[in-house]
Each structure stands twice: as structure tokens, then as C-alpha cells.
View 1 (tube, one colour):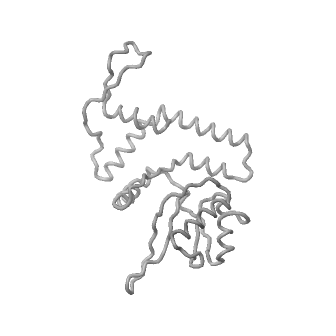
View 2: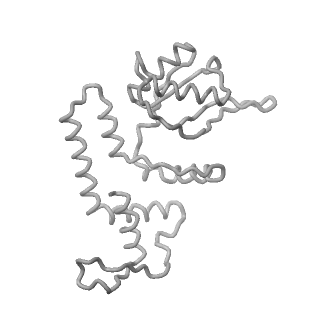
View 3: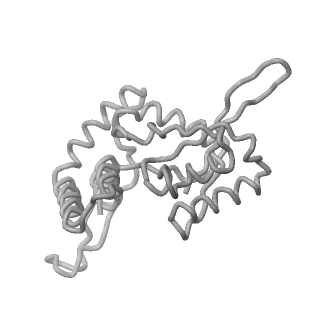
Length: 219
């Protein structure tokens, strides 16, 4: 679970609103109580007073925003002034549509932090939201997951060329040459079921990217 704080920064007579990513929390108990306990403990460790808390925001999970046992209500029980706001930023649009802004943000983070960036896949996110529904039944779960798997199987076969074209357009917008860097020729041994196990197959840089990155990520 990620933890991010938003706060006022005072500098002489100047006040700004800042937001900082503090890190990841290991979670074993994903119930509302479990998530509340680990969050509360982390805030105490950081020396942050719950009585000073004036807002809280989470994703759409019932364990987070639930009116009875969710993290939101547990904090409100301690501090009724901790106004809850739904985290609308998690209604994720495709990363490719915001890649220029994402790149700029990652460059800024990269100057201060070495944590690995995490990409949220839009199709996975949509299914994830459906699976959080209270009235979701097992047969619907199986159907949704099978459709998601089918989507990725199709994308594995047909998505690379389209992704390359979109990536080239994005690269042009960012002032980057839309070409793969030319490195030494990539080679691999043929598999046992190929015509010759000793012959080596040469990869272009684009094919190397498709095999070792695109297919790997989709799988």
C-alpha cells in the first residue's frame, strides 16, 4: 500500500501546499481494520498527529471507504474533522494519453527518489474495480478474468505494431528521435524444435524489444 501526505509548508510569510510520496507499506491483512492499523502505526512512527489531520482520500475499495468498517470511518472516529474525499485520480486514463506529463513527473521524482515507478494498466484497472463490487458473483469473476486474459492474448499477437506507431508519435511530441538505438546485433540460439540447434538467429533492435520487453510484459 502506498502512503502519500499532503501538507502546508511554511516559509517565513509564504505558505504553499505540498504533496509527498512517503513509500510503500507491507500489508498482510487487507481488511478495513488491518489497513487502518498499519496506516495509523506508520503515521505515529512519522510523528504525525491524528488530531492535526484535516483530510483523507483512498481508492474505491470497500475496505478503504466503507461506511461501517472502512479505514475512512475508523479515522473519522478518532478525528471527525478528517474530511473524506474520493481519490478521483485513480479513475486512470491510458498512460499513453498522458505520457508527456508522466515523463516529466518521473524525471522530477528520479532526481530525488530511486523507487521503481509502477504503471497501472487500464484494462486491469477496469476489471479490478468490477471485482471490488459487493454483488460480484463467482461466475461473473471468472467471466471477467477470462475476457481480460483473452484481451491480452489478442494484444500479444496484434498490439506490437500499433504500439510502435503510437510510441513514435509520442516520441516526436517529446522531441525524441522515433528510432531504436542501433547497438550490436542481438543473437540467440535456436530452440530444440528449430531446424538447427547450432545455428544462431539474428535480432534487429526492434525485434529484440518485441521479444524481450513487449512479449515479456504482456505475458
